[in-house]
Length: 170
Length: 170
Length: 120
Length: 120
Ligand SMILES: Nc1ncnc2c1ncn2[C@@H]1O[C@H](COP(=O)(O)OP(=O)(O)O)[C@@H](O)[C@H]1O
Ligand SMILES: Nc1ncnc2c1ncn2[C@@H]1O[C@H](COP(=O)(O)OP(=O)(O)O)[C@@H](O)[C@H]1O
Image (cartoon, rainbow over all chains, first blue to last red; front, top):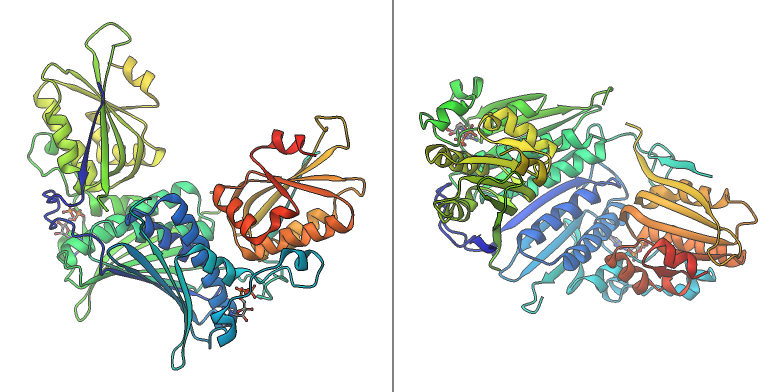
């Protein structure tokens, strides 16, 4: 005899007295980390936890993890010049069927041309040393999430904005 | 032939141009989550990531995870009355050999007597229904971390403060 | 986004030493306050003849003090009904937590299913 | 708190089909910009006679684009020296990332060590 039971989060949660879950939509989680390599993993794991809570599948969570880590590294390096007194912000905004992540820094952001068309790595050029080995972060971000943009916010700095969407078929 | 190599984070990081690691001491990571059950897992996982980065062993990371989750749940329930427009703050402060976590809410904190001597659960009383089944959070926090205190900060709210220490023998 | 917080499956096993059959409740996912309807519902739905109950925690990802309170409520009910509850599959951390809270006085913890079954 | 970012162990295997021996570089932990001295150092320390190199990613916990750039640097060196590099143990996610970046044109990815060894 095998029988499956489960409790959906839409049931009244009598034990805690908390009202029934109305989903995560409208909720925001914020994180600030120093501009120091390594802390992007904290941001990456926080984003993964939120994506898991929202019900994203493992594959999409992995995509988001890489995108968030790369955006944080860029914010630390290019935005905040590794000044560890400057923080990188990570704002996770939950929609009814999507998760938006903004990664903020205090710099000017990538140049307009780079922001509009991130460099696509050319492995043959890299192998022949006609292009540096690195320089894949923005490409990966754009390739892995459903929406990516880089926005300069002159007074305060800049941010990378990424969105992943829950797909009914996944 | 088996030979082990490794790079310590104290070596100059030539690839990134970031100066050599001077340890995590003095760094702070901040997180804000809505007062809604479930989001304590995001805080718990962020604390675990930081503890891992600092080199805490798995056992201590698990202790911290439970303590942080319980403190967040209390902040959401008792401090912020599950008003999800109020956030619970988590401030992770790294010392040379310890990690301090403050979990903040907007309430008044536990009463002075409870804060000074959290209730120790009595399983026999619970089994005989002379004590409610729940009511173990503060006890677990205190039992699992090296230092725990509950502080009321009248203007802003209250916080639970927990410390775990790196032990040279672990 | 109908998230399933706790999954419970129930399985009936023959006793290795010939006594009453053993009813295994296998938990997966989280055990928190949100698990109350699932866990207490599953317990209440057990056949009245079930005397030996085994809790399998090996697939549990997150367990907090509200979840432990639910396990205590199950132990209280079992105690009243003269049922025996054994447990297995707890991580070393949660074995420690169960011991700290004293639950181990009312449900012994075993390293695996075979050892737990043999303990009845 | 001497944190080891990347652990590398090097192992020599006989070829399953009788050719040159295979030198396995097993990575564990993180592969990031901080891995440069360990990874390039380990590569440079290999015997000059090593012709077949196998990268074992199965214990890698975190890999970012700076880490991938180090792998590319190793592939560039191997290419110049006429060495062949094969890889195994990558998660489905990093198989996808390696493919996106095009690295798979210079190091084929195999499901496990046996398949990778047979591919030389
Ligand atoms: N947050 C940022 N602020 C300023 N410039 C950035 C930022 N992110 C990316 N850039 C610019 O875009 C370039 C390409 O970024 P990327 O593709 O991630 O590769 P890499 O960081 O390895 O150079 C960077 O070299 C930098 O000039
Ligand atoms: N952050 C807090 N703010 C206000 N009161 C608190 C807070 N944390 C704990 N308390 C008080 O202490 C009591 C004991 O807490 P705890 O041991 O965690 O058990 P429980 O939350 O299950 O009651 C709570 O019932 C509450 O009255």
